[in-house]
Image 1 (cartoon, one colour):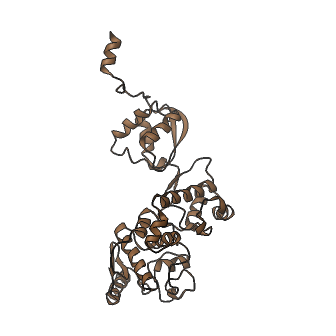
Image 2: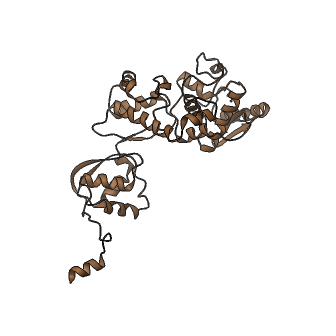
Image 3: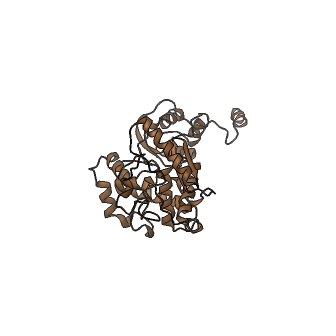
Length: 334
């Protein structure tokens, strides 16, 4: 009779999820992949012997306001932990062993970060990329150049991680993102090749910091290309000179480099950075407008216009703001 009472109180699927008590013992590493669901994380914890059931973990996460904010990475946990204790470890980003690549980083910055994360001599990642370029999975139309295809994201780092596995995962992620939308048709719709589309996305990434402005910057680029106007983008000067700065001098604009879009018409020969999803979206779907010029007068205030005279006024205001902060050479605008 008692068994019947239990059955009535706890019908199938409603029994309390099996759970351990306490903080556990021993040590086990569990990897959380980018985009992993709570169920997938719970399954990984169960497989590693950390929690007693996947449902105990997902229910604990559902009762936490931060339950969906678990960052990718490799976490050091204990065996037979309560689901709540395991969740608390995962909710602290400091516990995640991972490498985060920010949007807009250049390939050189990514290589340096990989060397540092894996505690390898400087230049190891670059040499690996060059020696194993055929194994990275790059599209043929990149010519073996990784710039633009080391996708900005967070990548778990385990004891088995090496330079080549990281690079292949970054290139693979870019392929999954680019392939999610038909990159060929999107490029053709903008009178570009797929490589040109990624290059434009990298320019957009270097010139704007929010989706709305990115879409407008993309439109400026397309409008100028359509009128055979030089792009005159300071981000390309910075790339040519291997630097990052807000100020571009007249002398800078005379820099002899194929990446100097003041001197050379059209797009630079390759992407100038690794763009994220927003920049790629902007390049594929630019805003509607007649703008030919833009300048960020101050943080959060980027102005777009089709008037050269208005652009000169905006640039003068930018220079005045810069002068207030520090003495600097005159900016040239875009």
